[in-house]
Length: 208
Image (cartoon, rainbow, N blue to C red):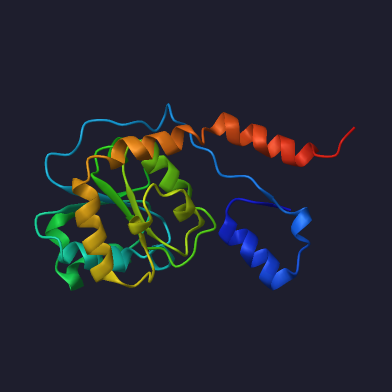
């Protein structure tokens, strides 16, 4: 059984009573050429990437934005009518841009000063490694297996609906000048070639 995070491994052990010896951890990989650092936006900017707005926590992200005056939010992914409606209800429409699905999300992602993904559950969200490859620190939750790769434990929020905590951590992440380099280093250690090799090793383990 191949899993992509310790969180998923723990779930398999708890709910399915899998023999631990049968489980192999293979982390997701990222294309570090496609996703790379670039010039930052003129205004302080946060990015949210996801097509399932309720599970991914878009409403929490918008609520956190309300607590961060002067900060803009780029939303990438098809969030339907909910996104604009929530932004209007929360009172942040003037600082949110909805891009929909993009062929190359890195063009928006790399300009951000931080990413927010207050997800309720993700085995290991690919967008987190993609953001880190762009040198963008990620504020996410302990319900996301990708949080295990975070360069700093304080970037991980405990409760997905805690907009106050998200806002506080985002504010700190956006001004921490050590994070972009640390994030890029983590992404480089999880390049897609290395991930494919690890997957092949796991699949062929025991073959003569």
